Amino acid sequence: MAYVTVKGGREAIEASIEKVRYEQFKGGVILKAEEVKSSMKSLVDQVMSEASLYDEDLAALSICQGEGSPEECVFLLRAYRSTLPRKHYSLEIKSEEMRIHRRISASFKDIPGGQLLGASRDYTHRLLDEEYFDKEAIRQVVEKWDELEMHEESELQFPKVLDYLRAQKMMVEYPVSEEEPDDVTKVSLTFPSSRSQRLQVLTRGQTGAVTALGYASLRGFGSVHPTVGELRVGRLPVSIANPMDEKDEDDGYSIGDIEVTEVESIIPTFIEREDKSREMRFEIGYGICFGQNESKAIAMSILDNCLEHPSEVPTHQEEFVLLHIDSVEATGFISHLKLPHYVTFQAELDGVRKESK
Image (cartoon, rainbow, N blue to C red; front, side, top):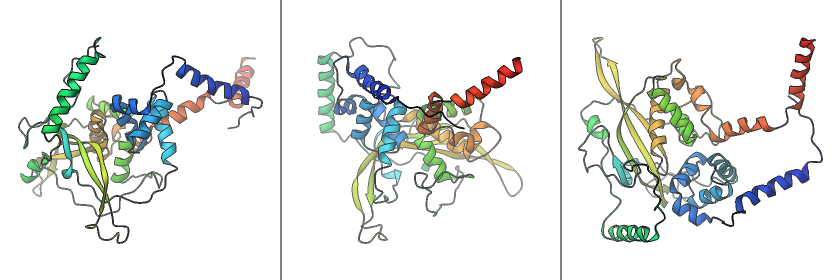
């Protein structure tokens, strides 16, 4: 494919970029990154997840610059991420150590430690509130919860719900893998893919795309319809090895924590015994992503299990799923259609004219 060289358009391009800033600021309001970070948590979490860069300040800045368009914000943040040096790899993070502020199970009513609803819009009426910006009402809510947070431990540790089923030998057992995980940000995705590659691509995937394909599986374009065993939202501690002795993992350094959403879904399956009889067991579908991204994490757990069982069904085909959920790849390829295609279209046009004679 070739393109006609375009010359003399620099002034027009610069004016177009300047017009973008005009359209953004002509109303006289200039959003600050601190305001976005404070009031648009869901969007900040989505952008961090799809950009695979955990930095709330940078995510908020990208939202201001990208005018709230998730695709543009993710593109900006991934571009910035590519300039950063990789100085350390974190030590293994165990999700059992999560400090939880939301935890529910759709499989069991009574779970060890109880259901913890936390902050969620799941229980709201989804009606527009014309008094949403009532400053006095907002002040009262903030003061009430500030006081509660001061007197109560808001983040707790709980046992895993699925450990209850594992203890009763109801879960399919998987051998523990000691292989080094693949890193799709360092080495391109290959097929057949490893599970570590699949999980990385899914957690970096565009939220809408991952959710849509998970939904497709539920509607019959796949064979996975799970029950959420446990959904957790909380903070996980992150540590790195001692730079002087990286082999000693017991002598690590804490570098902070990150908020994540983790989902373990339960999928019924049948295993074959030695006597050829079949017995029901439960498999797991796993999803985890930065921030509070619950629908995406659930959909990810569906697709994780789908891709563990390849078939001709679209949601079970790793190339179909993994190559079509990346935000930057998808947006870039669609957007490239706006670039000059003069040569190819003129060739097609000439062909139509010749045939019409």
